[in-house]
Amino acid sequence: MARHSRIEYDLMRSQSAPARVLIVDDDDRERDDLNTIVTELGYTAEVAENGEQALEKLGSTEVDAIVTDLIMPRMDGFTLLRSLLDRGDLTPAIVLTGFGGIREAVSIVHDLRAFWFLEKPAQRAALDPLLERAIAQKRLMVEAENLKRQLGREGQLEDLVGTSEPMQRVFSLIQQVAPTSTCVLITGESGTGKERVANAIHRLSPRANAPFVAINCAAVPESIIESELFGHEKGAFTGAIRRQPGCFEQANRGTLLLDEIAEMPLAMQAKLLRVLEDSKVRRLGGNEEISVDVRVVAATNRPIEMAVKNKVLREDLYFRLNVFNIDLPPLRHRKQDIGPLADALIRLLNKRNDCRVTGLDPEVTALFMNYSWPGNVRELRNILERAVIVAREGPVLLQHLPPSFHVPPAEAPIAAPVAKVDDSSHLVLEPGKRLPEVEEAYIRFTLKHANNNRARTADILGISLRTLYKRLAEMAAAEKSANSAVLAGGPK
Ligand SMILES: Nc1ncnc2c1ncn2[C@@H]1O[C@H](COP(=O)(O)OP(=O)(O)OP(=O)(O)O)[C@@H](O)[C@H]1O
Ligand SMILES: [Mg+2]
Image 1 (cartoon, protein in one colour):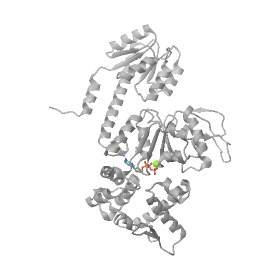
Image 2 (cartoon, helix red, strand yellow):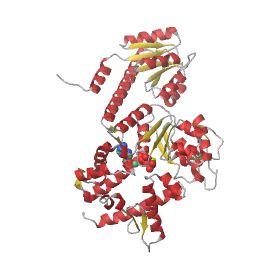
Image 3 (tube, rainbow, N blue to C red):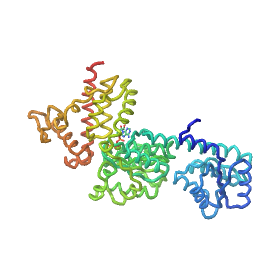
Image 4 (cartoon, rainbow, N blue to C red):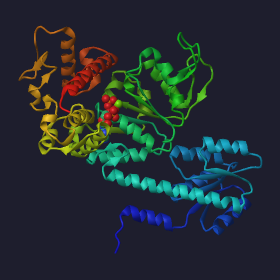
């Protein structure tokens, strides 16, 4: 006997049961006529007299398509469609419009994402093909949802990999929140995958076809952050040679990631809160209020409650953003993910670098499982990128790892030979070195000491996070050019 997985059963069931159509109309006669047509077409009809009743029905019954009037008492069709959008309910809705209301109907399809419109009174010949297409669309969406859920259980959700229990919990939170328009606050140490999670939320949401825009609040100079977020009009300030829409307008209908939210200047935080409250932005130097439909996701690697306590992050903004929190566990707390992550990263890096590396040698796996990964998945990826390029094929062996991986961490040279860490974990500087080299060694040492938490590192060093970012970018660029020089001279 053929065996079927649960997902196949779900698909078979959804394909065999008659589709259910919800008719929403306050006029008894029109409702009855529609009921007759829908039933004659072989579907099961459900009826509601207004938007409110329709939402109740949708809460308790699986519906494949909606046919709705627009003008109704209590809750009209516009509000019903808006509520469906807010809830992330993608059930296709066919809208019935009065004679000559084509213009309005087009805007409903466009702005409120109705499936299509029909002029009243709806004729069976017109409704038949429309319902057929709407129902097919809904069923495809359900199938896609089921498949994604299945993949999530197997350790993959969009670009995210993770079989550990904490990551499975994260996957389930992403799947719950993605269909809605709720603000999400993603927390977690640097390199744990916060931006990836934000992207997965976007891609799994009804906004997936609209833009995903990310802005790093720590990396944008304070003087231009307002114009970056809200845009500016021509001549708003010196150098504003043309009108420029900001991130909110660019992300319209899509998702905006506000990365490193705790680094946003306080004055901007107040303005941001206002935009989040009324979904309207005003460009710098402009008078017009522009309506925007943006889902905001914020991320931070700072301990967020501390940022609120230290008055770096406004408490009211924190509450507004923290409607739904996803906290990403550090890699050292989910070591079960190291294997699957390494496999997925090696596959990706093989493709990017035209290599044929097969996986990790058992000795390397053992070393990876004993390491604390202060830089989390980003550090794993960087180490594997180097290893794949050096190995080119076969397994990743110990010799393909950076030298600091062969020796216990306490003895690992930091920017050798400028400085080294002694037995009691103190940084010992070599005399006769140039100041920038010593500074670099000290920054690396402090980063490691702070578990790669950049905000804490900046606090300890007494510099702004922005300055730290700048220095790290310079260091990374110098390291990259040194690495490529080594690789260019290395074995082919
Ligand atoms: N679960 C995951 N599956 C696959 N790759 C991942 C995962 N998590 C993170 N990565 C990889 O790690 C890198 C860092 O991820 P990301 O930029 O999302 O981290 P972050 O938490 O935003 O870091 P930061 O706080 O420094 O901005 C990315 O290049 C991504 O490839
Ligand atoms: Mg990030």
